[in-house]
Image (tube, rainbow, N blue to C red; front, side, top):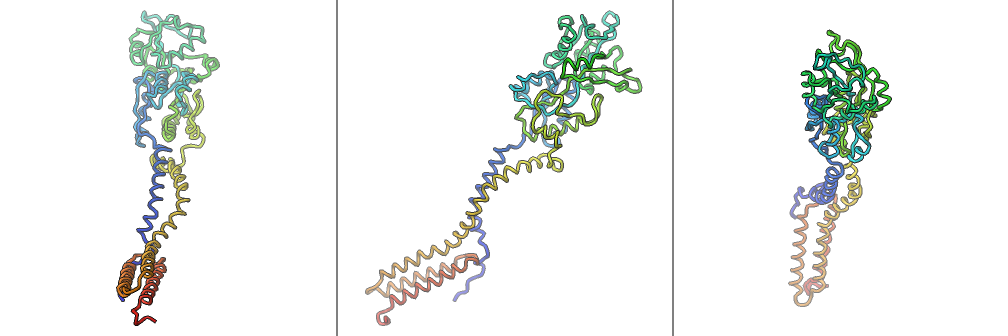
Length: 453
């Protein structure tokens, strides 16, 4: 008898296992793709940040944010603007994703209409009122209080900066009408040129001290900074303001600039975003804000900023969680994109659990059925031989006998070439014994007449 090659037998049929697992794998993969892409999409790689005017602190800080986020593969597109109010409008209209906005410049209606959230306050923006020491006629300008500005030429900047609205409130609490001043609306740089040329008497900024124009004017002869001696009273009348002190010598210790402490009033710069900004980007921006604004400064202590306080806009839940618990656990040890991938995998895990648990009960029976079906389908052939045996007889017994035995030999030959795992070999040997059993029946039932019992 021909010996069967052992290579036809194995412990597991990889082909049948793959076929049995394939439908489950396809369903699981489809569920993972849907969960990954639709349920929690990946953060965009481009973000529009509305900053401010040329040579402003907003512009300077915008470049710092762009440089930090570029390390994590996020391109921050800086969008110049007039300032705070212009930025707010850009957010509401969807022209920017995130922007610098000054406290006190937003209303509840604007926040609700634009769907805006705060990522935290970043730094104080003192109101800098720079005045010439002498007017165009060479007369000394001795301005000690806001009412003494009456009749002077003061630049407040364009309406979109937020400074005109802020300073009008300052004038109002002092009992002055804007019409009692000669107000202009030049942008910061041309206004500074006009001030130095003597064509205006003063200008108002509201900016962090890092702004180049602020630094220059603090050290320019003939230009002096107004001292808000009543700063505490302003903060009571206008709650969005805080009282800050510019220390003596902070600009230049060697030259003793300024020569004494200056009391200033200051709103707070806030990082404001649209509510649909991706949560992962919220964490990334707050983390960048901590790096950029978290140190000591002229008006702040270590760790004072960024902060969820000092803002009238509701803080985004992700930002509040960051301030409470620190950066997400994975982002402390992994790159941004890798941490974001693992953070989003929990959605995939839920999808996998929802499918794998029930489908795991289907795969084993399906695998067993595929293996045993190779054996069981030949029982149909055996049954056909038995039915032919029941109909055989008469004068053609010999031809029928030879035909049925030939069919059985053919079945046995094909069965001998079945590849089946060793764990199911008992079914194969059972089939072969049943083939022999039917063969014996054929031989006995269709034996030649002289051999019949």
